[in-house]
Length: 86
Image (cartoon, rainbow, N blue to C red; front, side, top):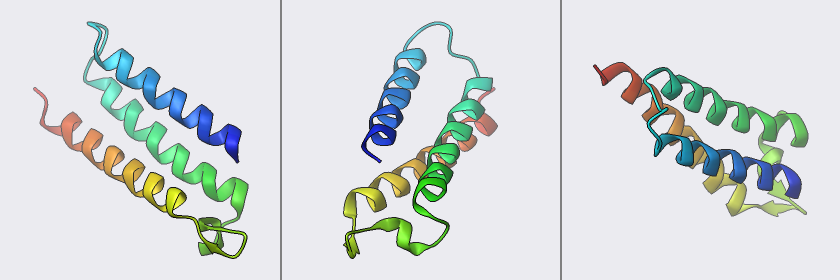
């Protein structure tokens, strides 16, 4: 699970770096949304498709909850930015 967290963080940092370059374009908002959704799905693939995915050693893992909520907000925001950018 730790390696998944590290790869996830590196992916988001790479996305931010790309956003700050002149290569960023409107289509990449959809890529960012898809990446965020993929990271949410990856949690369930590795931890199981139930609410238990948010638990570690019998107790709620706040880091898992916070990161997945944040990733959902990023996905929603990216789709919104894609739809409003002219």
